[in-house]
Image: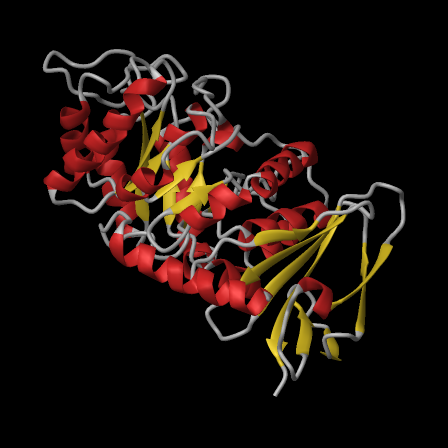
Length: 408
C-alpha cells in the first residue's frame, strides 16, 4: 500500500514540477544558507553593540565564515539580510537605500564582497506600506524596488507582509515576481504570503507559480516548544502542505536555531533531522563566529544534508502519532524504495524510551526487507523483514534518524 501511494505521489510530483511551478531555474533542491533574523533581530545599536548590530561588518564577517570554515562547501551558499537594513526614508527619486551609518558602502559593494567569496546575497523587503520594523514598504514601488535590488546584484529576495492587506497579496507577490523576471537577473523569491493568509488558506497551485519558497506559519523562536509547535502544525496540515513542495517551490518552516542558546544537543539533532524530513530550506540563524563544535557537527552532517537535498524533493509525512508520544515521520527518496525515517520522541519523562515496531506496520512493502542504518551514528541495525521487530532507544526530546535501504 505504502509503495503504491509513494509511486503515485512521485509521478504526480514530477508532473506538477514540469507543468505548474515557477520556472526560473532556481531552488531545484531546498536552498541553504544563513539568515540574520532569529539570532540578531533588529539590533541597530552599533555604538554600544558594534559586534552584533545589523551592519555591513556583520554580514561581511558571516560571509567570511561561510566561505572559509567549510559551510559553503557543505551547501550553505546564501547569506541573507533581514529587516532594518534600510534608511527610514526613500531618496528624492523614491529609491531605497541602506542606512549610511551601518552600511556606509551600500548594498552593491556588500553584494560584490559576498560574490567574491563564491556566495549569494539575499535581502529583505516588505509588500506592505512599511516593514515589520517600520522601514519603507514596497507596495507602491514594486517595479522600482525589483530593479533596484537587481542592480545591486541581489540573488534572493525575502518579501515579508507586515502592514499590508492580505487580499492584496494575491496580486502583489505575483507582480513582484514578474518585475524581478523582467530585470533579467535570476532572483530566488521567498514569499511570506501564506503566513499572513492563515497558512493553509491560500491557493498553493498559484503560489507555486510565483514563489520558490514560502513561509507558512509563525516565526521560530529560540526554544524547543517553538520547534515542536512548527512540527505539529506541519504534521496536522500535511495533506495540504506536502503536495505543494517540490523542486523549485518549497514550504519553509523557518530558520535552523542550532547553535543558539536554548536547544540541547539532542534537540538540535532533532530539529536538523525534522527539517531534512520536511524538505525544508536550511537557513541557519546563529553566530558562526563562535558556534560550538557540537552544533557545527550537526549542521555539517553530510548524510542529513544529502537527505535534505535529495533530488526527488518530496516533503516527508507524519505516519504515526499515538499515545506513546513517539512520532514516526517518513520521507521517500529518489533511489527506488529508499526512505529516511525519523522517530521523534516527544516524551519528557527523564529516561530513554525503547520504541518497538515492525516495518510492515509503516506500510513498507519490499519483499526482501530493508537494511536499517542510523544517519547520525552510522550504526547498522541490520536486516529487517517486514514482520521483524525493530527497537530503537530514543532519549527525551530527541530523534533517532535512520535510512531504510531495500535489501538485495
